[in-house]
Image 1 (cartoon, rainbow, N blue to C red):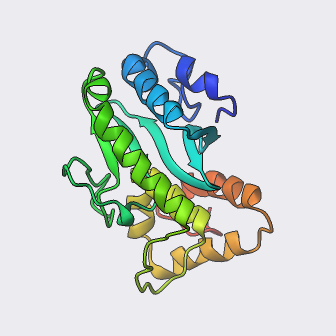
Image 2 (tube, rainbow, N blue to C red; image 1 turned 180 degrees about the horizontal axis):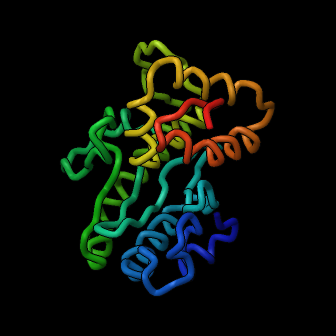
Amino acid sequence: MITDIEDYFTLGCGRCARFATPDCSTRLWASGLADLRRICRDAGLTETVKWGHPCYMHAGRNIALIGALRGDFRLNFFNAALMQDPERVMERQGPNTQHPDCLRFTDSATPYAMEPTIRAYLAEAMGYAEAGVLPVKTATDIDLPPELIEAIDMDPDLAEAFHRLTPGRQRSYVILLSGAKTTATRLNRIEKARPRILAGKGAQER
């Protein structure tokens, strides 16, 4: 995966064989992604790279992440349960997503046309970060590490595969991540575990 933000907008995320080719999804939506980047930076967000994607932060919290797929590109919001979505434009990324958490675009011109709305939604999310407001946790059988929750929220394929796992296999990944002392190590373990999760396997299965 990339670690330099400029690489995303010129080469791609580095997570598949289409990286640095004209067929990369980031090339399909280049102008729309550039507009999203501009809007996020103009809003005063700090630009970083996480999970191979542009991630925008404020007050020490992740606010939004840019992603590009074959059929669309998106601005994904963290802590989406807090978002009011007054214009009803947010969508769920997948069938297992609890709350509408992304703005999905199928035309590169749309972010420019929706700029006032995008700015308003970013400002709302930034306000929650400044106030330290977090969504109310819902009861679950398994307490997932925050890094795994964020990875699932930002990766629809991973989310669907993880939720299909048996409770025992899900717990195996919680145990795997609980043994890591730093966020960086946990993120690295999640990335390495992704193929096993997609294959329906537990952390110790090969």
